Amino acid sequence: MEHDVNVLRELTLSYQKIGAPQSILLALSGGADSVALLHLLSELQKTNPFELICVHINHGLREASAGEEQFVKSLCEKAGIRLFTKRVSVPKTGNLEEAARTARYKAIHHVQTETGAQVIALAHHANDQAETVLMHLMRGAGLDGIAGMSEFRPPYWRPLLRVPQKDLLAYLNQRQFKWVEDESNQDTRLLRNNLRHGLLSLLEEQSPGVVLRLAQTADILKAEQNLLHHLQNAWLNQYAKMQLPFNFLLINPWMHQELAMKRRLVRALCRPVCGELDYAQTERLVAFVMESSASSLNLPRNAKAILSKERLHILPDDVKLTKLTWQQPLAAPAKEGMGDCLREQVVDEASIASAVMRQVSPDDVISPLGMQGTQPIRKYLIAKGIDRPFRPFWPVYALGNQVLWVPGCGVSSTAAVTQNTVSKVKLVFSGILPHEINENGGKTSCTNNPS
Image (tube, rainbow, N blue to C red):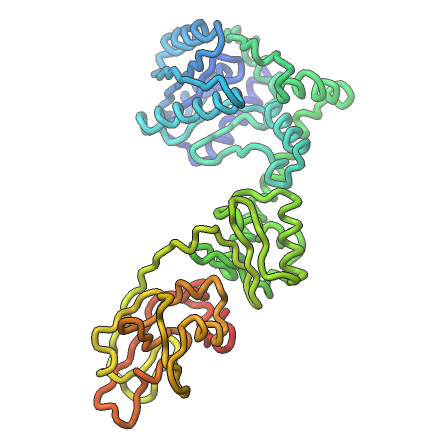
């Protein structure tokens, strides 16, 4: 019974680690793995009371499907466990395995919503983890891939990832528990099955225990991946902005990172815009930033990398369609001084009647302070060193197409206080400017390259 004790101990430790949820939805196929987890969870209930619910998905793809559904119904009825059965329709074209998986998870989520279960328990074990690691290695995956499946990624809980399948089978056999065999698991035309019955079996013969060691390696790498993810996010919070239409990182602090972190940071910046970059795409983007030999680079999904003096911008092609609403400036009594001339600007009160804060319009013009005549706002922002991706969205305080004040840059001669000013007021911009990463960062003059 040593296997029983070890397996139950792994389950108990994992249950406590994820916060001892009070309701668990088990995906029960009727196969050995999920049946073992069903009985183990029933054992765990004796010392840790929680609600256990099961869901069985019938894909209707095999003749045995109806018999498996009936087996699961009988199993749950004898155990007094509430069971939900869902029949799903799977397209016969394309990747059948992927289509079945998508339909299965959609149905499981529907039951989770219906029952309010806190977690979804899946019976993946150490052999599944070892196969996943090898499959990802074959595809050339990085740390994200070879770290394998997560023990807990809400709502999914995989408590058996450190338990070899042979221990689960020993647990079932010792207690004479029955299960059903899925004949498709023997189909070696599927890569996972080929690895399971071929390469992994050979590796286990040559080096007994290799399956468990691969699963343990994945566990180690997953913890290190989590650490790197924490460091990556801390860096991005300080040196990047990922709120479309603004999606950029600061180049100078990026340049001081190790290559591994450089790669992670640009991949993270790209992910919400153009998905996961592969190795070649990542290397090309890293070289693009480090060599600074071009101003733009095409990326997947019609996205583009745009390089300025201080920033790497990653933007989708349709970002230009974005419309922003900027908060009206606060009006405060004008005391001594002219404000900081960036976020606070003292102006001639009579000149700003009916003016509004909005994003730049292509027809806008400004009368720059100290210059004669007007200038298109586009040229003004270029002269102020504003990055190209920021210019269409920069906030301006304008009357019609006459810009009176550009927060972060300067005031026009039209709104400036003069010796003829009768009444003046201080305008206060309370938002976060496009180049600012957060409320405390990047509040420098546009003429000094805002960062």
